[in-house]
Length: 131
Image (cartoon, rainbow, N blue to C red; front, side, top):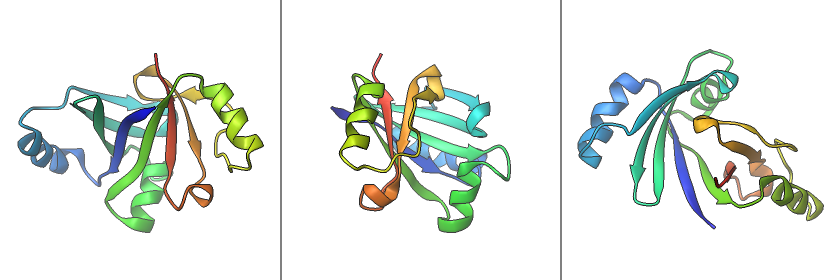
């Protein structure tokens, strides 16, 4: 297992990108919109992991809701797993509360699923199936 990425909710990519570009010494490695999640993402590869800056594209997106409740900052931590569907079944049978019972498509067309923070010490955890 490894940390796949850390998702950071921002009000504006336009405002946040220059800061992260200076911090990391480069522009984002990629940018994309994930329509299903109503989010625009800028990705910075940092070693084996990455930082994902997340901007809401709609007032009813999960990122917009998170920003209204908690403001900008770390939104989630993503962990890479080899078998996402199997991992979800194992965690659910162990009593972990799932947000997603089945994998779905996320950024980079990767299979993802979220665990409910009530089961993970208040931290939103995303599982990402390693390609």
